[in-house]
Length: 283
Image (cartoon, rainbow, N blue to C red; front, side, top):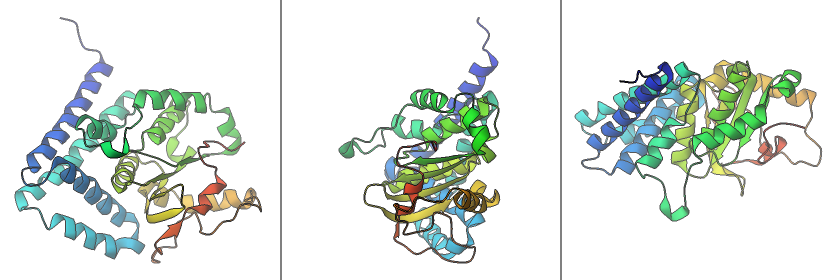
């Protein structure tokens, strides 16, 4: 019998955790559809993570959490933290190999939970990995600039951002200090998937549920790495050194509001133009 390599064994355990997550979703879907259970799982996980670091939106998000969880009987509620545990273990297995993965995106597509009417299809992570490797290279440009300011206007489950983090790690950088991402998606479920995965991987990011084409934003989510890593200050310092061109109109601040202040909704995404649509790196 051929002995399994360490990498293959770790990848198999990642798949086992992903399948365990899917089983828990299906076990809970006796009264609700798997699509609804999955959506509620990712949203509740995001609400819990957000409320640990973003006090300005705590009350509204706590009320939303209680609204969702209140419709499930106790035996079903108990499965949701187990789902989060399986997702965490799957992502941890990826990190152990040094090869990250878009775990939620794969589960989402394998379970056929995507929106067929809108042609929703997530980029396979292998392609994202190839694109990220080409963009990051040996990281020479990063050593000059200090960190990457990344915009992902249609983030899906965050696979491209995860791939960039992996490429930075392979180039010898600590992605938790070497990159910041702003991610947008018109589908609230996608915004929640992105926020959840980037939070668990401790990637600094602002995730927006919004429309990149119309500049509408309906909610903002700040990952723990963004808040705890002082990224509001770091982004402000970069803009102070590299002012926004005068021809670009900025209607809203990109950074999060001071702690204790509530964000006003809806907001505009016009400020995001400072980093450029579909552009990973400054020239």
